[in-house]
Length: 535
Image 1 (cartoon, one colour):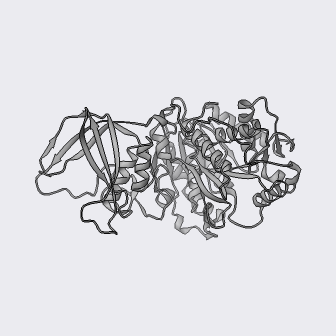
Image 2 (cartoon, rainbow, N blue to C red):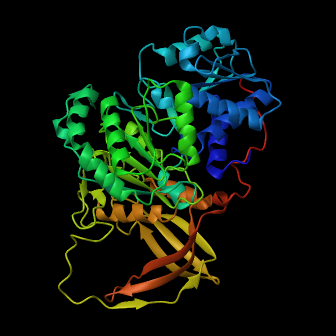
Image 3 (cartoon, helix red, strand yellow):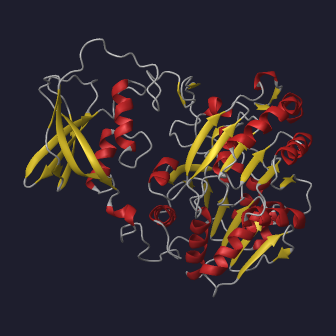
């Protein structure tokens, strides 16, 4: 299997962590739709080919089946078996075992000695206690104390305990992570269009244990079904596959009945009580495109792979950023003929958590709705980033703008810069110098170490995002990435003087991903197989 650059990077990071026998268990964070199964299958196959045994743990039979099929495709010569009551399989002694946690937690010793245990959807593991996941891992380490454990997830946090790394969590550190925005920019994930619709008032819903009570949510949401469905039908007339998340079974049935009355397309409902054969039939029809509307209740949030989803309707509220991300993330996969995915929220989730393609999603910042264009953006923004509404126009005449010529960039150099007469507490800046034709053709300073939320720091984040990095990093980290060739660089730059300024700003165009992001051979590609070393 040919891995994408970030999948190969994840495999390399895990391999190195295990070989080095670093303390703690590592975690890999890849967005929904990025292809975690390919990473899991590659890791499992490498361990098995080194003569060791690997276990893949999942919490749903659909995930077990998905991993099982992928591993058998890339490693047909290896004995791969499953332990899953849902699939009717029980092969605990295979070289690679793909298991449903509910089917093994009472008898982990039956699996024998395992070298590497891979936990899919690792955010399912609670921070403490002796539940299924932890008792299984402890039982396996009772057989092989040297067993390594790695987790994979798209959402490294839980509603009840926060981040799953560090503290009392099972995982010690994130060894590899790539953001949604980076993969959208590079075409690996679908663009997301987020819309906050006028739905029901979630403030009237009862909260227990930090989450909305489902029965209370249904009582508030059901009266809005008629209005919400009419709005949804209007917004999705040109959409092919719409996935709807409901508060409960009664709510889901009301939605389905209303959609059948308003739309000529077929509507189906999936809930936890569906027979597996019925669920598989409905999902197969939805994936095939013969079913436009699929309404579900707490079933299709994880382990559901339908790349054709081009609209997601959130008709249930959640306080969990992880669950919110998982619901929206069902539309992240790319598909032939699909330009983007529309996310329509009727429960205030967008204002609660922020758009999933924004790197600040799930943070404590407050989000607001632009009254002009309807875009979601941080409440402290001086203007809407989409339509610029709210920005005060300068009364004075627009300053003179003098533009230099576009010059081809041959080389980009990165430096950690300390301004003249700076004190020990003053932040350093990133100095970026552009060269072409043997001379410097532009220079700029990027304020990565300034106070988060300040205008210079927000501009620095924009600079990073334009170069394929969707998370805040320090000046030192940026210099290291730049030297390693892992920052996307412009093909051309020009200097622009505004208002008689002594220092020009640099404008860039034709920004291209670095070589590593274009599938070229790099340090991420597996060169050797040393899995036998630590076990």
